[in-house]
Structures are given as structure tokens and as C-alpha cells.
Image 1 (cartoon, helix red, strand yellow):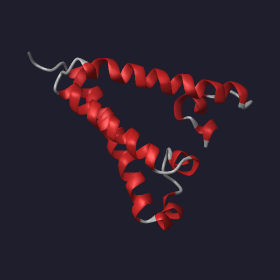
Image 2 (image 1 turned 45 degrees about the vertical axis):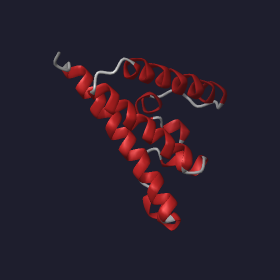
Image 3 (image 1 turned 90 degrees about the vertical axis):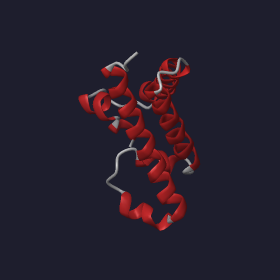
Length: 114
């Protein structure tokens, strides 16, 4: 059975996110002084908020999920849905309780957290 194009695209997005998070976390682990030069990168607040181990683990999880999607594994169909649901559920109280006004940037880029 050939892999559907949508699954390939979603797998590529997950691979991009996984490689991005893992590589930034590894840069911070190997060269912590590089954090000052990486100020313009998106999602850098994750590294500042927590130690770089959590983004490294999440990046590895996203990469494994991308591999599972490309292999058409059943577990890879349900894992992204659950992980994304957990992410939305954990970000919702921040938006509601932090008092940010809801703009298009909040929805599109998550700038309210940075």
C-alpha cells in the first residue's frame, strides 16, 4: 500500500520540528554561551523556561513519530493526536489566566508566551 501524501507531509513537519528542537537543545547543552547568539530563533523561550533536556526529549519523540508515520505504523497515527492535545490543554490555562489579549499573533505564532 503506498503511503498517502498527507501522511508524508505530516511526517515531514514532525521531522522538521523534532530536528529543530533537538538541534537547538544540543547546541545549548554543548555550548551554553551560544544562547545569547540564538535570541532570534522561535521557541527559544522553551530553552529559557526549562533546562534543554525537555526540548531534547520532545524533539526525539517528534522524530520517532515522524519515522513511525513514514513506516505507516498504527501507534504513529494516535501518538501525534494525543501529544498535540496535551500541548493544547497545557497551553490553554496560560492564555486564559495570564491576561493576554487574543490577537492573530497569539493564534498564529504563539507570541504571547515569549
